[in-house]
Length: 464
Image (cartoon, helix red, strand yellow):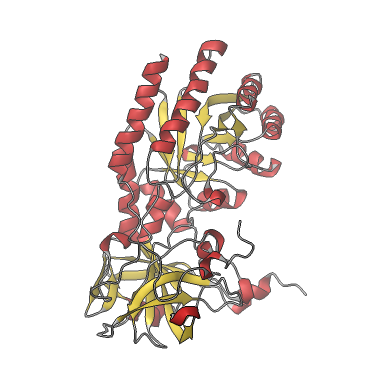
């Protein structure tokens, strides 16, 4: 690990940028696969579903997350259509509010939540509890009690203590808890270590190699109030290839087969998790839901055939792949400066009115993003720039490297695509900056689905 969150961000050589980034022939043009389907430019001005960002900024202010509702719904529907014989659970941690929970329900998907707060949002949206799954490595007694009382469709068990809590609660409430056991398959997903979740040294699930998973299954089967549906595996996030899923499926299905044969039980379900990647920059090449379905279903079918067991019903958990590309963040430029670096290089800094409070991922994961000048066309030459925020941190970087017109100036609008997942969800009030609004656009009409915070909101919790 680097010693400071900004360390790697400052290691690139000024005006050269990363090897994958190429200077565009026209800095005004969009890279289509980075944006929601209805996004385009008209005379240099970015539009989404018929709405100009000039009008959106005037009405709703900046920074604002701008969500293409039809794009969100289309991506959700695409996973359901690609996996017709599987259960698709939208991973609410990517982005969840009452409106999106309703969209997910209307498009026929199920919903994963991982805290009592996310469950509360789902219930506020009147999401059918039987289509809700409850995740989490440290579910409290209160969270489990509420899940059982409302009748969630599945609880993914993550610890021995959780088995004991469910044993006591099911006895007290006189109910049966449908559960899956989350296991770690020892797979190192090709992603950042903070979002890789199936290697052994981490907090989630029960180890297969250490025997903990088998022991957990036996404990669940011994409890009359618990109904074991199957095993759950999740190898990480922002994954582009199915290699890791293949290794994980082989290892988890081997345990699945052993349990069925040795313990004489049938496990009707198998959850391979999510983590499907999206395109943040031109270097990213994500798979379509159809390609993922072909690869993952073949993996499960082949492994079950080799082991001589019936194919369980598959579940998957896309979140980022639905919410991420549907949204861009709209900022206003406040200042610009060019800084001389060693060796005769320089770096152009473009400061916007948001930053790590609305997108912590560059500081947290060294995540790369793209952006475009959104409010006008420009004939100025493309200049390698770094878009930064307004917070008191040198690691407050929104876009590490991007070619923007050299005349970008105060008052211009910039748009950063791919911010629908893990941006508003991870947003903070750092430096007491109110969190940004989420505006949904559809058929030329825009509406707030999560309002902008105000200074008064900051003081509602400050009782001093």
